[in-house]
Length: 280
Ligand SMILES: Nc1ncnc2c1ncn2[C@@H]1O[C@H](COP(=O)(O)OP(=O)(O)OP(=O)(O)O)[C@@H](O)[C@H]1O
Ligand SMILES: [Mg+2]
Image 1 (spheres, helix red, strand yellow):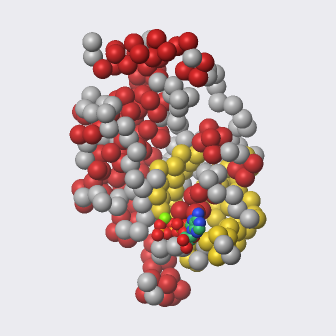
Image 2 (cartoon, rainbow, N blue to C red):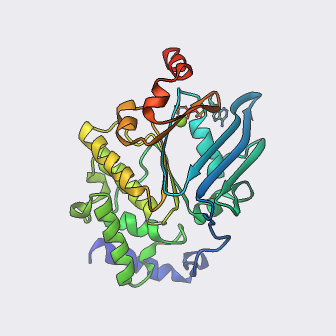
């Protein structure tokens, strides 16, 4: 009996437990309305931690299908901004809307993910013991507590979805390898693939190329570029060569607010931006 079969066997035996039965059915909750072509509205956001304003009157807009890079010195508030978008941190004031109709501040973290926002943290969190394919299979499951192999087998459509994602992330040849065998860069791609299985409309990626080889960085640039269009991608990254290689619009955050926005060339020539980076 191979590993997949034995896992299936275990799960079948546990089926008596309610929590192991997957919730079925389509996505619940409000539908994403992109009629104004803007997928994310952050307005007048402020968050303080012990009196320190990590986010200070932040206004930021992301278009549908856009690939946006966010840069800024350490402590500028980049990760905190992602925490607000994903419901991990509640702001003291301001608003955050996903499209025209979804008020992010009224939703829980799980509901925000369900509504179509995926976030990739810096450290890859793949399941090392499972194969690349199984990682994607698990990510596809609606209910994260449930082993997806509970279903007797994948539908042709689900299998296609996984295979398509494998191709997108460039890991088709490694599908049946355990994730523990992947390089750091490949694990990052697998995790992006796992997010893609949830079909997000907005993908937030925090420092994707830290620790990658140059070759892996180039491949990641291609991957993120290819993902935009069908969905919006927001990338926070310190590596300027990488940002230059993918950037269309760059937003510079500083002290919790937008300092500058424009093409890479525009922001690099901005006197205030130069000052902030020289001061580092
Ligand atoms: N939960 C928290 N409690 C207290 N302070 C926090 C918390 N989260 C963030 N901060 C503070 O808010 C500021 C912004 O932090 P944040 O992590 O958002 O910066 P960043 O732009 O992501 O920086 P980096 O480039 O180093 O990742 C920092 O001064 C940080 O110490
Ligand atoms: Mg950060």
